[in-house]
Image 1 (tube, one colour):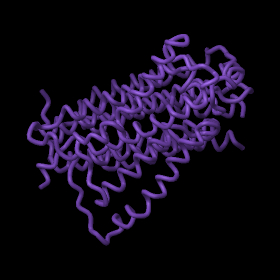
Image 2 (cartoon, rainbow over the protein chains, first blue to last red):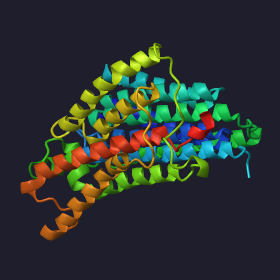
Image 3 (tube, helix red, strand yellow):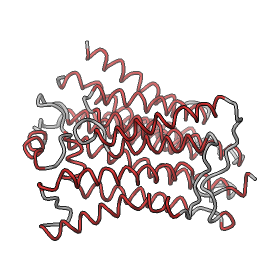
Length: 96
Length: 310
């Protein structure tokens, strides 16, 4: 694979980050903001991965390991955020 | 040919992400997000990052998907009031801002210098790490701090979720009670899937030593086996004060810390001597897999809420 063949993923990742940001700001439902946050996260991971592999010597394992760490941390944050969203709804679900 | 495929895949990913973010209903957003996670895993395969593809499919699409579905069900049962959409002007401004971020990123990327990457350094030092999978070597030997703190983040998320329990529900069985038709499709599914997932999960943990796989991917599949068995009513959810469950959750970070402290004796914190690297790494992988499986499953079950459904 060459750098050119990975280029679509770079553009895709930049688009995902923008889309996620838009959703995070404009979505009124908290659950959907969590989804938008996850789209930003995976967009950043994809950007990192697509940029790190454009060398002929094969993929770089260091970004891969950091992305796996990132995926697990994103899941932890998502689980806590969703628990907070449910607790917020249980207390009436109104804005302060 | 592969450029065409990658372009098409990228377009589909952006379209599915747009459906998840802009679609009208929350349930649709969750379903599109799960499909999005699987497509991203496919992109990782195209980027020759099989380890990441496995993690994304299992954690990013699978577990995050279950968490979202469970949260959606609870929110619907609570009948929270629907918030009003933001002002039109805010939407336009947000769209312009988000577009500017995307264009700015693309402009910045085109200015990036070409760098060689670290694959040669990793390959050079791979023989002393105790594993033949370069990604496992980075996770469990070169960048051990990252992985140790990551396991602590998982633990912190679980403790955080538990602190949201109402007083009268603590300490009870995790999550809500699941009612399943005994002869239904779901119950059948719950009998067939967990054994297969157990084998696949254990295999992924083991194979991580020399091929794509590892504690995080394998541990997630093991967690899935447990989650399916509980959600289909074949096993009761564990109590949050269950001693065995708590030991399983703690064994990974504890063993990892002990390895780090033992490293102090022979050199530095988290230093693993090459002579012992292979058995030590295998022990870390095994204990981490158990801890990750238990923590992720408990995160999905959620805080005790049994009083509500009975």
